[in-house]
Structure formats: structure tokens, C-alpha cells
Length: 175
Image (tube, rainbow, N blue to C red; front, side):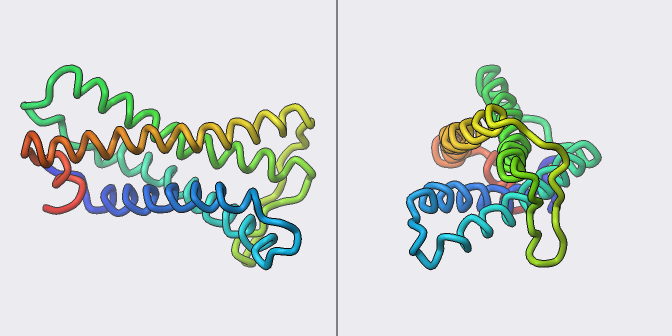
């Protein structure tokens, strides 16, 4: 396999765009006042698309385990291969645990999460104020930490494309 399968590419870019958008939305919405027209809508959108990212991330993990991924290119150094593996595992962990932490603190009151008006994701277990507060802190700091990993990941891909002039980036975008 010389390139990632199309399903992997589509899921990768959908998750990436959603995570960037959700981080921006989360940063913006925490300063909304009760009188803002976005006060209720922004958190609702954040929750809906957070659940969607979680589902897409699980699907991506399944697709990657079934279809696999191409081996690193021959010109990649051992350090680049290790850094890539660490970045990918960190990204996978983040796109699973950040939505879980959002679910934990959102449902801490016992209320479920409305899924686009179609269904409700139930609150599965009550949590204490301490666990809720830890989930909130994790959600915030992991989201900002994710931005650093995304920057390193994208920077590595751009370095391979423009400096090394290899197919690393093209394997996730074209052909």
C-alpha cells in the first residue's frame, strides 16, 4: 500500500476540520453572556459535533485496523518514524478522550445530550462535582494541547512536502 485508503483520507480530514472548529467554538462560547443569542445554540452545536467527532474517530480506528496504513517512506529517519507514531497515537487518544470528557461533564446533572433533535444520548451514570470538574479541566487543557500536536503533525507533513519533497502529504490528500 503506497497511499491511505479513500475512507481513511475522508475521515482524517473530517475529524481534523471538526476538531479545529470545535476548539475555536469552545474558546469563543465560554465568554458568551446569558443575553447573547448564541448562549444556548453554541453549546448545543458544540455537543452535537463533539458526538459526531467521537463517532467518526471510532469509525476511523475501525477502518485503520481493518485496512491498515502504508509503511513510512524509506527516506524517513528513525526519529521521524517515532515522532510520527507518537503524534498519531496522541491524536487518536485526543479525538476519543476529549469527547468522552465533554460527555462526562455535560451529563453530570443526569440530563442526556440531544442529538440534532433526532435522539438523546442518555446520561449513563451520575458523577460527583469533583469528577465533573476534572472532566472540564481535562476537556479544556487537552483541547489546547491537541492544537500543539496538530501543529506539529501538520508541520511535519509540510516539511516532508516542501523540504524533503517526498510523498508523505500526498498519501493523505491525493493519489
